[in-house]
Length: 499
Image (spheres, rainbow, N blue to C red):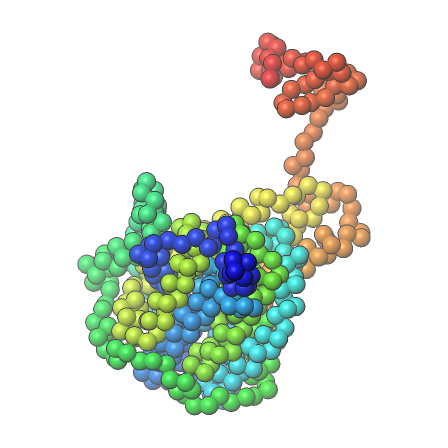
């Protein structure tokens, strides 16, 4: 029956922007653009963790392939969705940066990569159990909170773009060279130029085309190296528990649980952010489905030698800048990631894209995220309330770990793990201040000094004095008590003008 086809939770809801379908060619072209945008971010954690564990380059290659594969599967789950799992929003999933420092600490503490996998599995299962608590906080995310968080996401990603533009590897001799930054600037210029061209297809593919053109420029100038593409296996399916069975240590699990709480906070913010950008309804049920997909993917990923999964904020910016809101585009990107995970040779081709090229595109992408947040903040009412101080304190607090990365180094590990993320810092501060000032209003004054924006309209006594009893203003016209229109005098002319 027709009614039965509409009832399953995983069925698309008619009329949602994210349910729009594009042609196969466009879907995979835009999907590939998502892969290029997040590729550097998804391979960085296994590189860092593998190096800390003293792995060989071949084993690190297996870690990278596993992370690509699991990230692709997690992306498909998040975008397509099944009952109770998946937000059905255009969100790309991948290894979360939030846990990198904790995982390195577990490895250096003697637990090895097996303890990392064990702690991720247990902490993610605990996270799966507590997701209902997080899905109920939607009422605490009004525009003053979501706008602040979205703006902070964009701002906290800018150091990543800057590092990419400088070359990505801070130990390399050419890190920060004029050539690297020049290549990034050229790529950024191409993005802006293509965005200005009237053709809608070219404008929407500006990021992908700019990366291709930037790579060609890099090849011509000797800044791109594809010599290693042919090295290594062509096909390599991720082997379950390739590095041995996971081990379970209480201390490692506790520290990883803190990471999971951070991941839940960041993913909640990303779900709300992409919902704002797409222009679709995001309620507690949808947030819960998205968080459960996050936690299920994270719990299963260690089986295939990967780590915690979360939504990638940089791809939220890609949705904003291209205007392509279809979740099926991101699903195609997830399928490409799966293929890259089982065909390492293709992954090596993508990995050969010079990091400065990614940086040039990243400046525009991440800046777009911040601009989207500012647009949301423009909808906030600032008169006679404390919203301005909520925004100011939250963004300022979120910028602390970005401006001073070592700010929390002397704090306990659990505290540093939570607040070292500017996104988590800003989100927690915005939520707490919103509750304090807008939900518990006891003690709030009518005029909160300098924190109240003076945006109210002011009418002088002289204006009021000329009004007669019964005068009213309707549809831009002043009407007297008898229903006749009163001529209005222009401030720049002495002639009576009817409006």
